[in-house]
Image (cartoon, rainbow, N blue to C red):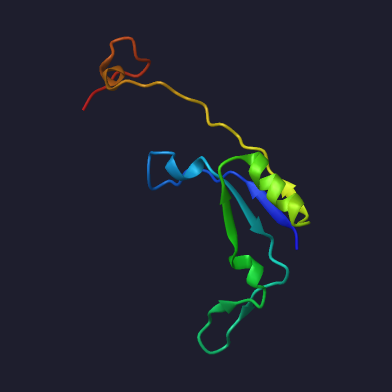
Length: 101
């Protein structure tokens, strides 16, 4: 029952980072998922696959895993580079490729 501790990336459906600030602890799948022959749905007998715990910091998530004896793998957070852009840059005269219709 190995757990992953990571900070999820922001979703592509929004521009904000509201849900990407917290750290998440979730369990790795213990067994492969099986396919129901009638409906084609996938299922699993592993209930830990449904557990997701969110923490405010990496230290809280690690402390929780250590307190309950959960083996874990820590994935360090990677910060996205900040690229400052302005709308006026689209119409600048010093662009490599001039903007035209």
